[in-house]
Image (cartoon, rainbow, N blue to C red; front, side):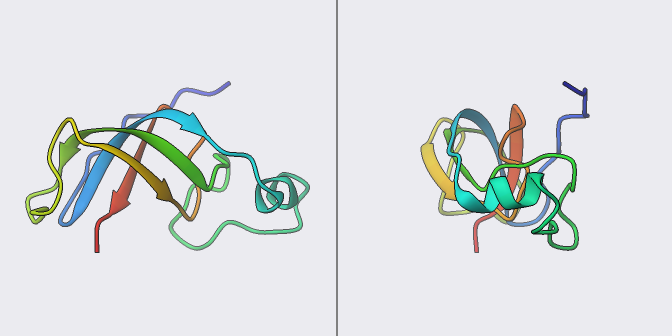
Length: 88
């Protein structure tokens, strides 16, 4: 376990409070060191599939709102309590 600052959504991003995360083969490969995290993604937080609730929106977000229940595919970081994701 490690503490991180809660991300702040910018531009067209939403901040999702993660309620559930999937586990897939890519997560296992990444944990074994065989699948590096893409640039700009936290290398020390796994997780490519999440479901949760939007708790904040960046200023350019028009198609989602706080309180929306969502599921998403991420480039990484889905095992955290909160994850930012671009909506476009």
